[in-house]
Length: 464
Image (cartoon, rainbow, N blue to C red; front, side, top):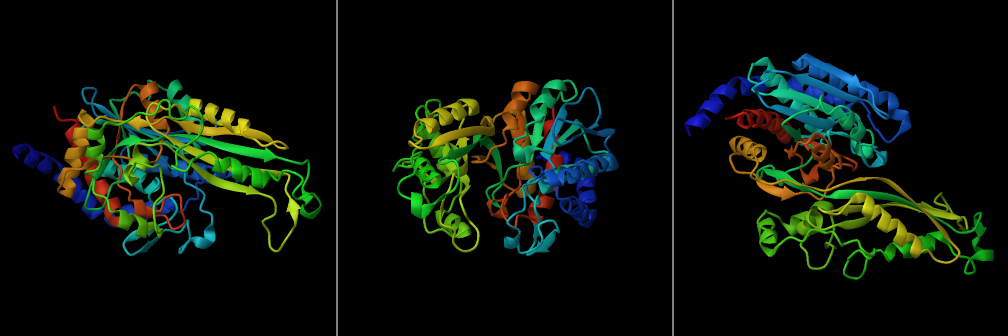
């Protein structure tokens, strides 16, 4: 109790600074959210540099000793640092300033790049993923810097390619090991169970993302003259995709499950203790039932089991009215979420081999591996985890629950491999935030709670 009192006394000035500047923090976040930094679209390349400049200037303004834009083979990266003492640990904060495309724009209730507050939530592309959560770290740093409360060294590595698989970040890390040297990597790009149920993400799934092209005849054909006599690539592609899972919703690619980590009954029982309402889950996304691999709960299906999903499928005529053709080509994008021990490249190779083997006569297949990364599991007894848990407990009034996320941050596993540092995932998002979807949002409560909680992590992490 005495130690808790001392921590609160030390941090009082930082928390008072946060409370006094909340409205300004929000308006500055709005400036960042207005920048359409969509990494996937070439026409937004100028906006990527504008966003990077904004982040660099923010870091300098709030107290960084140094901040600069680092060029990569793709979009630029922002690096910044604050040195306090060689005798103190160093925390590397990772985040990303790029966002997903906002389309379909007609489904947004408010403009995607004009942040709007509705019912206590910030609506905008990137409000949660990841600009809102990234900005929490910048403002937490500001509060500690301006009140001389920071008791560790800080480095910031903010990239612009996370939403396209971080293709340049691996090389950057390998080429800048000394620059990025740290004791722990702090990331807020995940979520928590609920506003009154804090949680820390201790597991992420890996990813293999594929694009397939199926070709039939050398041109679009008249469906009356050729229909029924020539393989229709769209029909065939649909059959091929359907065959990738069986009646138990298990993936049928040979060798796919060979390296899947199987959790014990005790570990599954611990997972089941996390609060979860299936009815609320269904109501939130307006479905009448869930579907997934037989023998596993919904949380297990997204946390400890792999999955295969079609992310997009197209071909033929999709305009107004009718055009009776048998298309020459059909396409699909397919992602496979992976669990610990599965390797993204191996899964991509297995997929390509299998997909080629099931191509019907009269068609040819072209398979591309677009990007991927490995899964991540973190123990719950490390200094960083315990520090994060204490921070959440102090600001939320209850201990956080360790959870496994169904999402992927492919670069996390590479950080440990290349930089030799583990990551702690202090996410403040909610499932209802609609990341990657129209009407992405981030509750004001979560935004401010993150700014309030992060400084305590630094304080507890530096305790002797």
